[in-house]
Image (cartoon, rainbow, N blue to C red; front, side, top):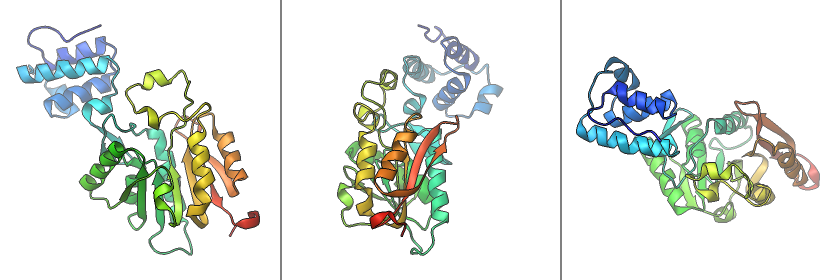
Length: 289
């Protein structure tokens, strides 16, 4: 395994070591820019700059974490999502670009809301870092957004992000719908755990919280629970939008239809996979209200 070069290290040498170790160029640049508190343009213009002893030591430590497979977002402590810079720790999943598909769909539904109060009520179930809830509040400021998570540590990260960004979201500890009994929402969104317990990809995600990743033998346990309990918490014509695995769309659509949702459909992510599914809540007898 590669280690940083011995002796004085220049910007060019540090990046060369990183690339030789297999780190992507962008990751290496972002990591070194973080150490030197500069931007990538500065690195290009100062390739001969010699790192101070403190910077060289920090670079060596972070370099080692990176080549051992720790995600860059955890090393840097932040991740961009839907135009927001979010603080992330190992207590939360790293927000993925594919999840922006869910946010975009949610914003479309909010824009289409008719016959509801000027402040539609939105809930994000299993909010993690707060990425989805905060992106919705950022883009649709009139919405009353509630976000829940069963992990106190994750909720603390989300609350910190909300405070730092100045976005007013109501945060609450909750095992899915349990803390919002008696409340009704015009839109519910969730990116629950959806990987099967024995999925061969789980070891590669070892740095992320397992409770936010896996959900039973087929990966559908959490999705099934969210769908099953949703009607008691939704206004007539409210929408439930869910992220799921790339190969789970047909099963999630069937769960939605079986529970009485109408207009059930799916949306594709950046890679063209059906990544999100949702539907509109209907009333007794299967008639849209």
